[in-house]
Image (cartoon, rainbow, N blue to C red; front, side, top):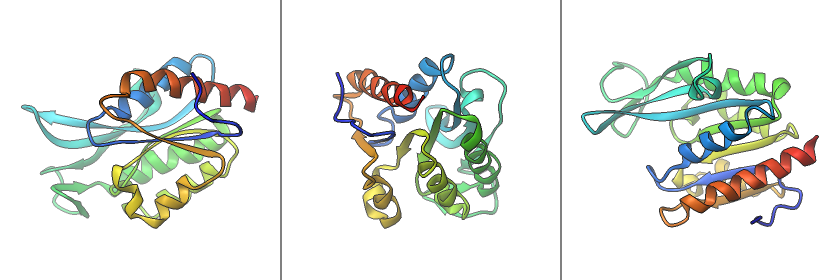
Length: 194
């Protein structure tokens, strides 16, 4: 099955927290990793005794069990300083060192750029959104997740209004079928880009 993707090369996935956005992106990246140059980063939640205490940011290579970098993106009690988003203190330097750096490298090294997530924590790093915009304008195929509240931020709404982008909302009801659909469409865009 194919979504209406003529000329689409940027695929945004949004949805409520915990619905599986990161899982979907990671699965697509893993399925395509051996055939295409996949670069980028993901963020994963970290739980202690079933309670979410923070998030780590890591290169896609690290997330797929290969060599790569990771660090704490945010934590409930690990950092004494730094901006807050909800109950978390954000480690802005990790966004710069892993997120922004990885995006910059992907501009020359990748066929597919993975960005997980474009949200309130990442936007605290001043160089993050310009790096995302450079990636979007690069002509590369992009698979990115957007925070569910992206509609409340004009900068993020502008990203999704591009004619070369497609936004899908992941739900509990569609998340199993959406993996195959997104993977198919990303792969189609990668083949067209070759």
